[in-house]
Length: 148
Picture 1 (cartoon, helix red, strand yellow):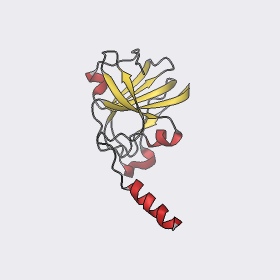
Picture 2 (cartoon, one colour):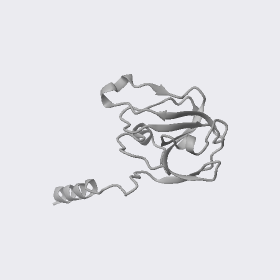
Picture 3 (cartoon, one colour):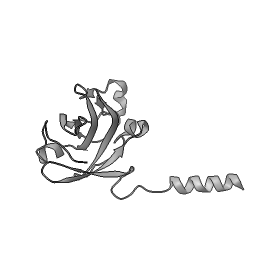
Picture 4 (cartoon, helix red, strand yellow):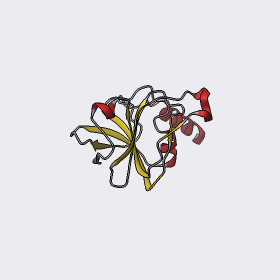
């Protein structure tokens, strides 16, 4: 009886479809200097940070993922198994942009360990991933401060 209940529960959970906007984590509003707000998923655990936006077939222009770390450090990112190009912004502990990798290309699974790293030269406590082109469309530049 217990095994049947467990199987039923597992089937019910695995059959759930993601929300229509493909959000899988809690979200937070990120306000850009131009006043526009991006709804960013929060990646706070090592597992969520490792997965990031891998396997996502799309990312709406008003969506993103905010990686939150406990301390500033060099934080190189790679695009292994990411299906879409992204703008990646590194922010210091004051939420000031310290580096932008615009239109960062995906890296297919067959490249594996040879996928390049991006950023990481400046210490960052936060990293924000946006749809490719969003940084330019919103006039984002190094030195801008984001609110979240």
